[in-house]
Image 1 (cartoon, rainbow, N blue to C red):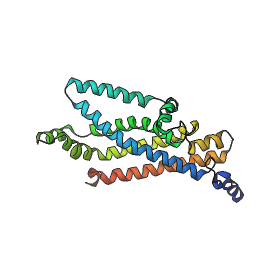
Image 2: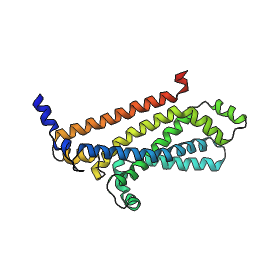
Image 3: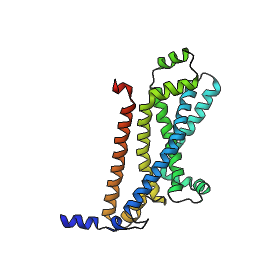
Image 4: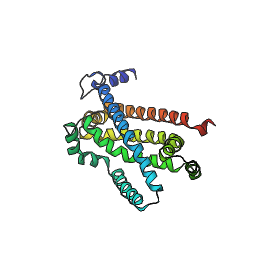
Length: 234
Protein backbone atom coordinates (compact mmCIF):
# COMPACT_ATOMS: atom_id res chain seq x y z
CA UNK A 1 0.00 0.00 0.00
CA UNK A 2 2.80 2.38 0.95
CA UNK A 3 4.62 1.60 -2.28
CA UNK A 4 1.45 2.28 -4.29
CA UNK A 5 1.07 5.69 -2.64
CA UNK A 6 4.72 6.50 -3.34
CA UNK A 7 4.33 5.46 -6.98
CA UNK A 8 1.12 7.50 -7.27
CA UNK A 9 2.69 10.73 -6.02
CA UNK A 10 5.87 10.19 -8.00
CA UNK A 11 3.95 10.89 -11.21
CA UNK A 12 5.47 13.85 -13.14
CA UNK A 13 2.29 15.94 -12.73
CA UNK A 14 3.16 16.43 -9.04
CA UNK A 15 6.79 17.41 -9.64
CA UNK A 16 6.83 19.00 -13.09
CA UNK A 17 7.39 22.74 -13.42
CA UNK A 18 6.16 22.76 -17.02
CA UNK A 19 2.92 24.64 -17.65
CA UNK A 20 1.70 21.76 -19.83
CA UNK A 21 2.30 19.02 -17.25
CA UNK A 22 2.07 20.50 -13.75
CA UNK A 23 -1.03 19.76 -11.66
CA UNK A 24 -0.49 22.88 -9.58
CA UNK A 25 -0.03 25.28 -12.49
CA UNK A 26 -3.09 23.89 -14.29
CA UNK A 27 -5.16 24.07 -11.10
CA UNK A 28 -4.16 27.72 -10.87
CA UNK A 29 -5.20 28.26 -14.50
CA UNK A 30 -8.59 26.70 -13.81
CA UNK A 31 -9.12 28.94 -10.78
CA UNK A 32 -7.99 31.93 -12.85
CA UNK A 33 -10.54 31.19 -15.59
CA UNK A 34 -13.35 30.57 -13.09
CA UNK A 35 -12.58 33.70 -11.07
CA UNK A 36 -12.48 36.09 -14.03
CA UNK A 37 -15.51 34.47 -15.66
CA UNK A 38 -17.55 34.94 -12.48
CA UNK A 39 -16.44 38.55 -12.03
CA UNK A 40 -17.60 39.37 -15.55
CA UNK A 41 -20.74 37.25 -15.20
CA UNK A 42 -21.77 38.98 -11.98
CA UNK A 43 -21.15 42.44 -13.45
CA UNK A 44 -23.27 41.62 -16.53
CA UNK A 45 -25.60 38.86 -15.37
CA UNK A 46 -27.11 40.44 -12.26
CA UNK A 47 -28.17 43.69 -14.03
CA UNK A 48 -29.46 41.56 -16.92
CA UNK A 49 -31.53 39.45 -14.54
CA UNK A 50 -32.94 42.57 -12.88
CA UNK A 51 -33.72 43.99 -16.32
CA UNK A 52 -35.57 40.83 -17.33
CA UNK A 53 -37.63 40.98 -14.14
CA UNK A 54 -38.46 44.65 -14.59
CA UNK A 55 -39.45 44.19 -18.24
CA UNK A 56 -41.66 41.22 -17.35
CA UNK A 57 -43.63 43.42 -14.90
CA UNK A 58 -44.02 46.36 -17.26
CA UNK A 59 -47.47 46.95 -18.70
CA UNK A 60 -46.59 48.77 -21.93
CA UNK A 61 -46.25 46.82 -25.16
CA UNK A 62 -42.73 47.98 -25.99
CA UNK A 63 -41.42 46.58 -22.72
CA UNK A 64 -43.24 43.30 -23.30
CA UNK A 65 -41.71 42.96 -26.76
CA UNK A 66 -38.28 43.83 -25.37
CA UNK A 67 -38.71 41.12 -22.72
CA UNK A 68 -39.65 38.52 -25.30
CA UNK A 69 -36.70 39.39 -27.54
CA UNK A 70 -34.19 39.51 -24.68
CA UNK A 71 -35.64 36.37 -23.15
CA UNK A 72 -35.34 34.55 -26.48
CA UNK A 73 -31.66 35.51 -26.79
CA UNK A 74 -30.97 34.37 -23.22
CA UNK A 75 -32.74 31.07 -23.81
CA UNK A 76 -30.83 30.42 -27.04
CA UNK A 77 -27.45 31.04 -25.35
CA UNK A 78 -28.44 28.87 -22.40
CA UNK A 79 -29.43 25.96 -24.63
CA UNK A 80 -26.19 25.95 -26.67
CA UNK A 81 -23.91 22.99 -25.85
CA UNK A 82 -20.78 24.58 -24.44
CA UNK A 83 -18.32 22.59 -26.55
CA UNK A 84 -20.05 23.85 -29.70
CA UNK A 85 -20.32 27.38 -28.30
CA UNK A 86 -16.62 27.69 -27.51
CA UNK A 87 -15.69 26.52 -31.02
CA UNK A 88 -18.17 28.93 -32.61
CA UNK A 89 -16.74 31.81 -30.56
CA UNK A 90 -13.10 31.17 -31.49
CA UNK A 91 -13.06 34.06 -34.02
CA UNK A 92 -14.55 36.44 -31.42
CA UNK A 93 -12.04 35.36 -28.79
CA UNK A 94 -9.19 35.83 -31.24
CA UNK A 95 -10.45 39.30 -32.13
CA UNK A 96 -10.70 40.34 -28.48
CA UNK A 97 -7.56 38.81 -26.94
CA UNK A 98 -5.38 38.18 -29.99
CA UNK A 99 -5.59 34.38 -30.01
CA UNK A 100 -8.25 31.68 -30.12
CA UNK A 101 -6.73 29.36 -27.52
CA UNK A 102 -5.50 29.72 -23.96
CA UNK A 103 -7.21 30.74 -20.72
CA UNK A 104 -7.91 34.36 -21.71
CA UNK A 105 -9.64 33.26 -24.90
CA UNK A 106 -11.66 30.68 -22.96
CA UNK A 107 -12.86 33.35 -20.53
CA UNK A 108 -14.76 35.02 -23.39
CA UNK A 109 -16.73 31.87 -24.17
CA UNK A 110 -17.14 30.96 -20.50
CA UNK A 111 -18.61 34.38 -19.75
CA UNK A 112 -21.02 34.28 -22.69
CA UNK A 113 -22.20 30.86 -21.49
CA UNK A 114 -22.47 31.85 -17.82
CA UNK A 115 -24.17 35.27 -18.11
CA UNK A 116 -27.56 34.07 -19.43
CA UNK A 117 -27.60 31.20 -16.93
CA UNK A 118 -26.95 33.55 -14.00
CA UNK A 119 -29.42 36.12 -15.34
CA UNK A 120 -32.26 33.57 -15.32
CA UNK A 121 -31.38 32.50 -11.78
CA UNK A 122 -31.41 36.13 -10.65
CA UNK A 123 -34.77 36.70 -12.34
CA UNK A 124 -36.17 33.60 -10.61
CA UNK A 125 -34.90 34.81 -7.23
CA UNK A 126 -36.57 38.20 -7.76
CA UNK A 127 -39.88 36.55 -8.69
CA UNK A 128 -39.96 34.88 -5.27
CA UNK A 129 -40.37 38.27 -3.55
CA UNK A 130 -44.03 38.75 -2.50
CA UNK A 131 -45.79 41.12 -4.90
CA UNK A 132 -47.50 42.83 -1.98
CA UNK A 133 -44.19 43.98 -0.55
CA UNK A 134 -43.21 45.60 -3.86
CA UNK A 135 -46.59 47.28 -4.22
CA UNK A 136 -46.46 48.63 -0.67
CA UNK A 137 -43.06 50.23 -1.26
CA UNK A 138 -44.17 51.67 -4.61
CA UNK A 139 -47.30 53.16 -3.03
CA UNK A 140 -45.08 54.95 -0.50
CA UNK A 141 -43.55 56.86 -3.41
CA UNK A 142 -40.23 55.05 -3.74
CA UNK A 143 -38.41 55.48 -7.04
CA UNK A 144 -37.59 52.49 -9.24
CA UNK A 145 -33.94 52.71 -8.22
CA UNK A 146 -34.91 52.68 -4.55
CA UNK A 147 -37.22 49.71 -5.09
CA UNK A 148 -34.50 47.80 -6.93
CA UNK A 149 -31.77 48.60 -4.42
CA UNK A 150 -33.62 48.42 -1.09
CA UNK A 151 -36.29 45.82 -1.85
CA UNK A 152 -35.51 43.67 -4.88
CA UNK A 153 -31.79 43.12 -4.33
CA UNK A 154 -32.00 43.13 -0.53
CA UNK A 155 -34.83 40.59 -0.34
CA UNK A 156 -33.51 38.36 -3.11
CA UNK A 157 -29.85 38.46 -2.01
CA UNK A 158 -29.76 34.90 -0.57
CA UNK A 159 -31.26 33.57 -3.81
CA UNK A 160 -28.86 35.64 -5.89
CA UNK A 161 -25.88 34.27 -3.94
CA UNK A 162 -27.24 30.76 -4.41
CA UNK A 163 -27.48 31.49 -8.14
CA UNK A 164 -23.88 32.71 -8.21
CA UNK A 165 -22.82 29.53 -6.42
CA UNK A 166 -24.66 27.31 -8.89
CA UNK A 167 -23.23 29.24 -11.83
CA UNK A 168 -19.69 29.01 -10.44
CA UNK A 169 -20.00 25.24 -10.14
CA UNK A 170 -21.24 25.10 -13.72
CA UNK A 171 -18.28 27.20 -14.86
CA UNK A 172 -15.86 24.80 -13.16
CA UNK A 173 -17.35 22.06 -15.33
CA UNK A 174 -17.19 24.28 -18.39
CA UNK A 175 -13.46 24.88 -17.86
CA UNK A 176 -12.90 21.13 -18.00
CA UNK A 177 -14.63 21.01 -21.40
CA UNK A 178 -12.75 24.10 -22.56
CA UNK A 179 -9.49 22.30 -21.81
CA UNK A 180 -10.18 19.85 -24.62
CA UNK A 181 -9.96 22.67 -27.18
CA UNK A 182 -6.77 24.29 -25.93
CA UNK A 183 -7.89 26.47 -23.02
CA UNK A 184 -5.44 24.96 -20.57
CA UNK A 185 -6.22 24.10 -16.96
CA UNK A 186 -7.26 20.80 -15.41
CA UNK A 187 -9.44 19.78 -18.35
CA UNK A 188 -6.52 20.13 -20.73
CA UNK A 189 -4.25 18.17 -18.37
CA UNK A 190 -6.82 15.38 -17.95
CA UNK A 191 -7.41 15.15 -21.71
CA UNK A 192 -3.79 15.21 -22.89
CA UNK A 193 -1.91 13.50 -20.07
CA UNK A 194 -4.75 11.36 -18.77
CA UNK A 195 -7.15 10.27 -21.50
CA UNK A 196 -4.84 10.34 -24.54
CA UNK A 197 -1.90 8.85 -22.60
CA UNK A 198 -3.98 6.24 -20.71
CA UNK A 199 -2.64 7.61 -17.42
CA UNK A 200 -5.06 6.75 -14.63
CA UNK A 201 -3.08 8.73 -12.07
CA UNK A 202 -3.67 11.97 -13.96
CA UNK A 203 -7.36 11.19 -14.53
CA UNK A 204 -8.01 10.34 -10.88
CA UNK A 205 -6.07 13.32 -9.58
CA UNK A 206 -7.73 15.89 -11.82
CA UNK A 207 -11.19 14.52 -10.99
CA UNK A 208 -10.43 14.72 -7.25
CA UNK A 209 -9.16 18.31 -7.55
CA UNK A 210 -12.25 19.36 -9.54
CA UNK A 211 -14.51 17.74 -6.93
CA UNK A 212 -12.68 19.58 -4.15
CA UNK A 213 -13.10 22.88 -6.01
CA UNK A 214 -16.83 22.27 -6.42
CA UNK A 215 -17.26 21.30 -2.75
CA UNK A 216 -15.33 24.40 -1.65
CA UNK A 217 -17.48 26.67 -3.83
CA UNK A 218 -20.68 25.08 -2.51
CA UNK A 219 -19.63 25.38 1.14
CA UNK A 220 -18.64 29.04 0.77
CA UNK A 221 -21.79 29.82 -1.22
CA UNK A 222 -24.08 28.16 1.33
CA UNK A 223 -22.37 30.02 4.17
CA UNK A 224 -22.69 33.37 2.38
CA UNK A 225 -26.36 32.78 1.54
CA UNK A 226 -27.17 31.96 5.17
CA UNK A 227 -25.19 34.95 6.40
CA UNK A 228 -27.35 37.43 4.46
CA UNK A 229 -30.70 35.63 4.90
CA UNK A 230 -32.61 37.65 7.50
CA UNK A 231 -35.38 35.02 7.48
CA UNK A 232 -32.92 32.34 8.62
CA UNK A 233 -31.61 34.65 11.31
CA UNK A 234 -35.15 35.27 12.49
